[in-house]
Image (tube, rainbow, N blue to C red):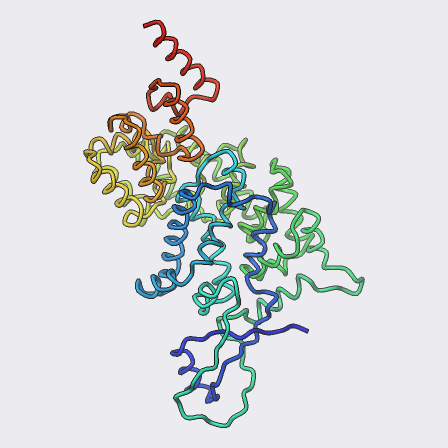
Length: 484
């Protein structure tokens, strides 16, 4: 027996339901199985080793990532039609959900944190947006209520009705867009449907053998119901074997299918292989297909005009054929950036700063996927406020293309610590990579060791050298002091 929970419905929606259904609304109860509440959240914890502890992450970094998570959630809610005020109010009421988003980052990217590497704004966005989209697919217009009530299901309190009550029995209505529609319900049922043999469907068993647990398959099905209907021999198995033949490790197949389940619905002979041939002609290194597909499986689902438009833009920016090849191989997601809405506006902005756009595109194409208003301009203004000239800022961006991929919150934290170190500001112009190192795992510990030794290294030497190189540099400095 599936139990059901009660959902808090905004008063405006209650009034609408009252006018249209003429149902007395002492309370509204929607058929909403508790067992599917936050399935993606549950899955996010099951796909990785849950032993990673938040205590390993410095409080200052957690605070900065919470601000980033808030920014991602705010933009997502606004994209769904909420006003600035409503989105801000939802964020203020969603502290537990924000903590959950940060915990998800730490679990999914555990290995990054263990070696002291921080996530960029783009990496955080790429990790959270698909998760939020999955929740929106599942809960639709009640997503805000779900987020605000996390980790508990949103509960309906007794509603004082102010409209005329009509004594008509409450009858179950067809599920609104807020819950899983019948198509998704049927697809989800198919995932766990036990056949006459007492086993799961063949394609589900095959996916489980590949390393995908049932919950992960359900998450994919919620996002893309057609996945549940793909035949094993006609669609799923041929694509999987094709990927394995390309050199994709078996362990990466579940991740690829999770990112782009549509791959299984595309004909190998008519679409996938011709698209790959076309991309090789455009510059993708055919020896690197396994890495390219793992990084961005959606690449194989774009139309040829779209692929050609992006490549033509790269050539227009002065990149050589070799550079275009490396950009497409290292950052295939650049294909997803709109030429007119993303790439060209970002190009115009950086050119106005005096940045060599061709060099920046080659070194860090991810920068061109950032929002000018939400990410790029605020970072520029930050450095201007700290006394850097536009020429110095352009030099910093040119030397370290990833500079703008870090959130403003992280830039502020590292700037504030930089002020305590006694280095001249010119050191940051020479070595803007400073902002890419972990404050707690690299910058503070090495500065403390250097200070304790009573010596002074260049900012570059202090941070970029290996552990062995750093210790040798300290010894050389100490020896010079002794000799003098």
